[in-house]
Image 1 (cartoon, one colour):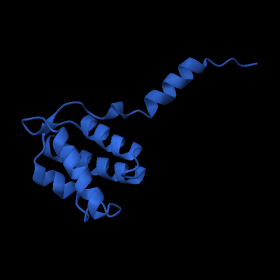
Image 2 (image 1 turned 45 degrees about the vertical axis):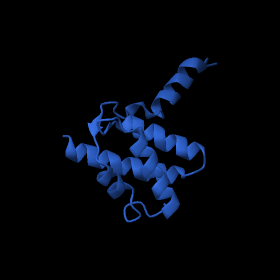
Image 3 (image 1 turned 135 degrees about the vertical axis):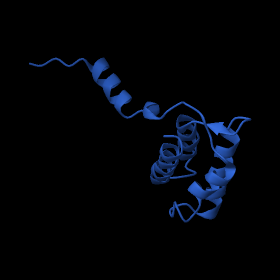
Image 4 (image 1 turned 60 degrees about the horizontal axis):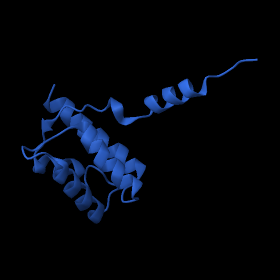
Length: 107
């Protein structure tokens, strides 16, 4: 009979699916770039009110110097998803867009 250490299994599962793989290093992200990434053209599952909400929430989260991390963006989007303002598919698509921008801009 095999005994499982459920605490270790739970820790492994939680760490595997957690947002901790998003960088906490902050980079400058202009409002215009937020608008471009979040625009309906890029994320076709967002309607206009959702697009405006996402842009505003991410813009508010930026520091006074316009910097924000991928982790902070994930927190904002995760909060909106948990409040049923956006879907998990929207969250995933948006994070892909921001990850792409950050990786290309700040290599």
